[in-house]
Image 1 (tube, rainbow, N blue to C red):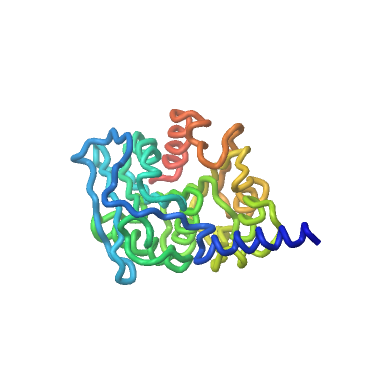
Image 2 (image 1 turned 30 degrees about the vertical axis):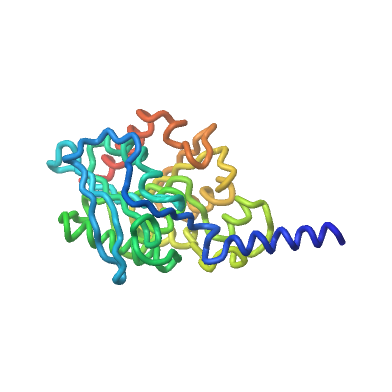
Length: 274
């Protein structure tokens, strides 16, 4: 009985802490972006604003070193803090000589609004439309890349809104249910922690673009067997997966080795570029 009461109290505290999708969304507001460790020339960086359902969102357009006939990556970041948290990844990708657009979802940093699953989809649509209209980027030069929570956005866009050159999914979870059971090792419904379904495993079935999955073999937060494996099995061909030994949720590129990481991405992009 004492164990039951203890569990009930701890569960109640956990659920209280996770109201309004706090389990998945971990934004932080800042007065300005710091872009930690930035090595990209200032003339190639443009901080931008765009609208999503009336909310002002913020992002960065990163122009390739040599912009003639280059590809553009629409990068959808994870659930933590804001763009600054992922700036090292922008720099990893920048060495592919691509344009990169990264943005903060509503509720993150200076972006207006409150976080939600529906909001993520709308923000992704708005970012896609902004890249198309502001910079004239057609689908045949567009690449979608999602990291962790960002896969909710990138997989949705590839499934329902655009047919890009290819789609990359790093450290992706299959659904809210699989994530709660994987990350917390507790067998209870995801609806106790989040209002959304975040069903990447179903949406991936609808894509019509070449797909690559990158996942850490030692990812204890989003276990491969319950998440990445399911997404990969559900994805149509052509597809490829790389399960990186020794990598956890956060360090897949580093454990691959950055030169190898960039080579793998470039070869996949080149294979399906006209």
